[in-house]
Image 1: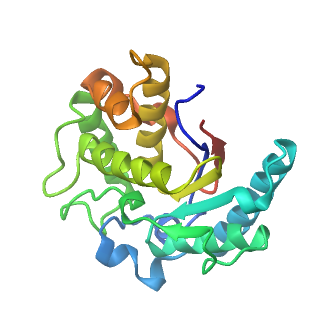
Image 2: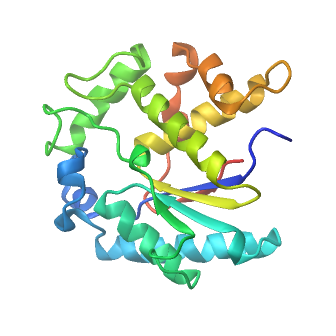
Length: 225
């Protein structure tokens, strides 16, 4: 793990959102940013709890609050979650410590899934298991999400050093993020290798098709590296 990343990483999936409650897939940027799709009241409680758990882990690890960075997706449900977590830490989303990254957005499942029932997720995950490079029609494949998550990580790593980074994102992107970080860490690389090269080396079907193993509940916090 030494020298693998310049920062320590935690992830939190957004709290239970109104789309979660109503069982609707909201994955396009256009819909995702709408206020009507932010957190449900249960989700606000989950985000507060995640903030408290994160604060506890920071204290246990002796990490001062000035070393914390909150990096979040621009969707309303993730922005809302980041705001609640930040307030638990006595921060505001306007603070320089909090930053939105478009590449942390939800995976776009395509027009035939958008605003449809959550029951259709299983169709996408079956496709992912067969071929993580195959896109749902008009949407993003697992490999597409890996590419933009790699861009986000490279950007975060270039901007911050020695920080505790909390990534506030969505179910599929966070499953995929954990998959690639775990595989890249295990794989190692001759001479270390930069993060992007390590991820590129494990961008293969046998690794990417396994992302469901890293599923998170709504509002769940997890230390990654």
